[in-house]
Image 1: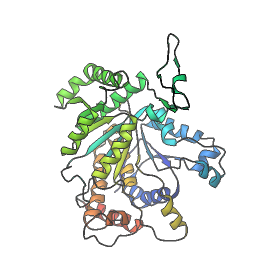
Image 2 (image 1 turned 60 degrees about the vertical axis):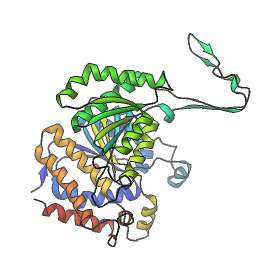
Image 3 (image 1 turned 120 degrees about the horizontal axis):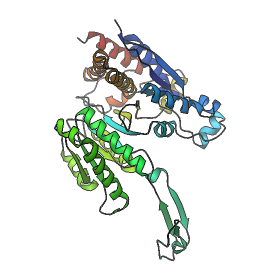
Image 4 (image 1 turned 120 degrees about the vertical axis):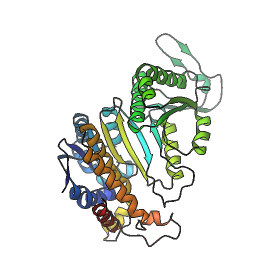
Length: 396
């Protein structure tokens, strides 16, 4: 008997090998064991071009309406992709558009599998990186100047020269907003409460006394005013730490906490954490709104173009589908949490357990075979999904 849900999940389809795997995951796992309304939005590069990217906006608004969305990896075009697909323009990243509409924070969490070796062997529990996916180096103002002393900064009330350097150089201006930082803080604290993990926030406020100091100040205010009692009731703690001090703590710890970071820091450190747990391909990505009421899940990888070209030629592929499977399990999990459906929560967790048991039982794709000592022969993507299907059926 299938596990059912009543409220919709918004599905956003994608591109290339990621979408091929997506269809297989739907066929062998999701449609096989779960049943409920799924609203599909085609976010392929061709349809985004055809609709002037309106489909991305519509999909994001649907996620806000129905509270749960799941997204396949998509192409963010460069000049070569514009030529390849005869696109009208360089369309923006769908992820960026969706993040702005949902107003959320990206949470990256490693998928821990016992027989996948870890570069940091004592990391036993997840380290969840919360990345503030707004502003900073990702929306910069940049200048290359032959004379830095000519640069002036003007506001309505002040005018100043930041440099007295009559030489060639570069200038970078970054920004953030109070509203965005407040949303970031609330997302992080709500996620920590939901998962039952301590929370750390890292900046370099000793150097960037105003910029990073503003982040630290807002986090502390929101925590004390809105979350301190909730954390105390669950015996959880929140602490700000300098980023260099926190990096040392992370490397020495056993894991089991949420690590909140600004945009660029979160981008870099999430890759470090993923690799420390064994593989960049074993990482989930959850976008949670600032009020904790809307979620969008996806795989933390791209469209796997090289494998797609092989598949187009009729060759068998051994692409790792685990992160995409977990995008679905996380969407099902949150649908169950939001709707108070324990059987759906347990079903999502059961599917994740079946994935882990498949790998631990010696069945895995080529990327994991390269990591696991004395590994078996790698299987194709379809063979891996069929093995997960069998293991799910055999679980109690």
